[in-house]
Length: 74
Image (tube, rainbow, N blue to C red):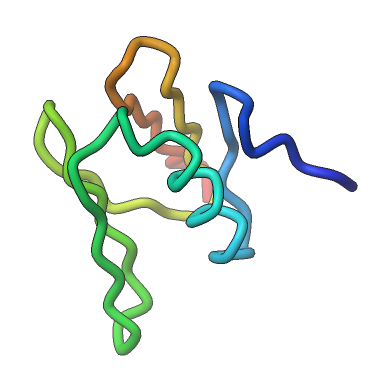
């Protein structure tokens, strides 16, 4: 399945490379991100604070800021 990394929305899956690629295509919607290889935790810092990005999260860059919706079902 081909992913559209330029799309305004993205659902995080278990492929970190794809999530980072999508984020890099939407650099204007957040300030920075960090990844801790030991805990395998991706944190994105943006205008509304910071979010830990997990598999199943819905990311939206449509409004010029990164908006995340967490999938608590997992």
